[in-house]
Every structure is written in C-alpha cells, then in structure tokens.
Image 1: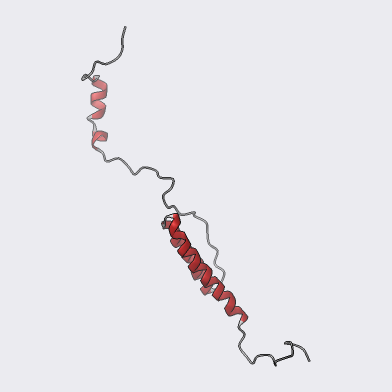
Image 2: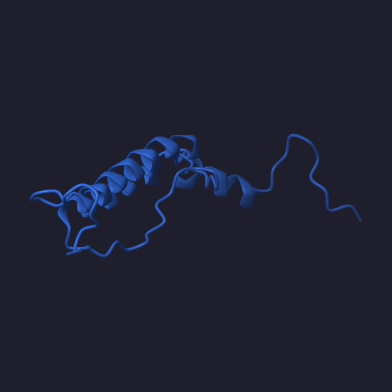
Amino acid sequence: MNDSVPEGELPEAMTAQESGPAAHAEPGPAYDPAAPAPLNIPRVPTGHADVDARLDRLADADHLATDGHVEVYEDVHRGLRDALTALDVRPGAPAPAGRPAGAQ
C-alpha cells in the first residue's frame, strides 16, 4: 500500500488549509540575530547633567549596526573625558611657581 499523493493532486484537508486566511497573510519579519537590538541595560542617573547626557547618548548605538557603534562610543568617550578634565580646572589663582600647592 502506497500512501503518497500522486503529482498534481492534493488531499482535501491540505487544500482547505492553504485557501484559508493564513494563506494570504503577509509573512512576519524574520528573526535576524545580527540585527541591531537594544541591550535594555538600565542607566542610573549620576546627578551630573553633562555626564548623564553623554551616557544617554549610548542609547543611539542600540539602533545601529555594529560598525556604527564606534562613532557613538568615541563621541561618548570624548565627552566623558572632557567632563573629567573640567573637574581638574579649579577657579581661583594658580599656586605660586616653584612651590607645591598647600606648602608654606
């Protein structure tokens, strides 16, 4: 006994399934593991507006392909480095030359 279907003939159940609403539906987007996807890592505010703005910029990388991350990371790094450098600049008169600050 051979249960195979001769070419050109479809069983009734298969014909009914293929003619239903699902047969005319558009296929959904295929999962692409290489596609950009957010990491969903929460960012805790630091309390420093400039630093927080730079860290928020990291979210821009969530929607870029990997080769686009470099530009965002370099921009964030540059901004954070500038913020740290600004902490070293203290207002007021500089220490006298030749004497360490705080020496009498």
